[in-house]
Length: 527
Image (cartoon, rainbow, N blue to C red):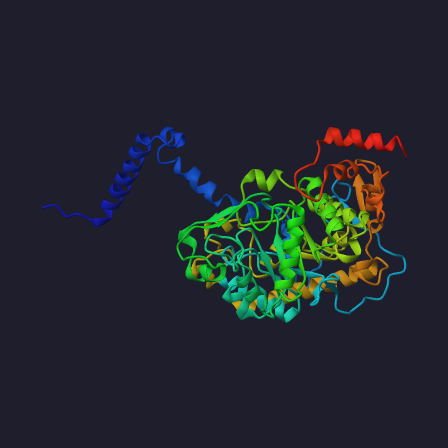
């Protein structure tokens, strides 16, 4: 009888296992690499799976990393942890790059202003105006973010006295539990105020809008990361908590159409805004959009002039904005970037004489004092940030938001992964990030020779135009004078032709661009 040592069996087990894997690799037909390189080809998929982590932890420099560099992420982490956020040895940015922008300082800096930085939002028709911070949490829905993340964000907003946009997923139990100020975003799915067939329900809206925690109502027309795109939350992800917040059945597909059913023309949009303002008891009502066809926004402006109805605010979302998941072409190549979209909206309101009654917010990768100052210089009254506050609650930019496997419990509905996010600690970091960013903004403002961030104008924000020309935004971009679009003889590149194409009664262009140009040139001949 032979004595058998169990340790001699293991090599045979390993060999047999690899042989089976190799045989299966040769027989399968989906992966060419595995057919040519059985067994060893699996290392390709392993390395591909961990490539983002390897790059971020071992090879990424301070200026690498997209959409946010390591330096910018570290700035948020430091401010959120309330530790020193200084840069040693000088800037690592290429100050001669074509995309480099800056603000000039003053020889005679002002003393730092330590008053609360706020803006009052609410036009003539608003009876409950809201005093908002200059920096707030942008739209992120419960469902995209975990319950713990929503709760930490809202508790942080309450402690810091700034608002938290609900996103189109409506007001969840976690928003209510936090107790912070809310902006209720109303998307095309009308979550939280919908009928059984997905239409707008005024009675449900009135009931929810009466909540004192809700300070403003924001109609979502489009978002920068995927403008013009609807969405479907599969029924398998519609939990009891999500169904409760959105007013939909548990386990059924939750559909967000690509356009609204409550209105289809500019005038109907303004009438809907007026209805929401009345139903909410006079709270500020506005809309958010990423600028698309210019004549469509100008049609809304013409509808304001024709009807006298106006929103209390408009939030401009840049194409560089974020989302949990978007088609690649939508994220990369659709919609107007913030700098151009914001200046266009501001100019249209100034040129039509409406700017004084309508506040403008802005969002799209805005996480530093320079981001805020530069955005205010281009026409915003306040700014919002989503991913900045996500970093504050622990996001590490793993870009796994769409997988339900967020490693820090921020963008997941997995109850076990959510436990990684400790609400008391992260809510304090949210407050710290907001407070320290505004402190930096006050210091940045004083160094620029200004008393308040609202004093930043286009002439303070410098851009590089090509290799040689350096000019302030007041020269690099077009800026309209008050009422300029109301003068029939106006000839403003990028504005006049589109103005002639826009009508108040429809979002469709009233005439082709060729006809509009011809008409415009014809009119010029008589002036």
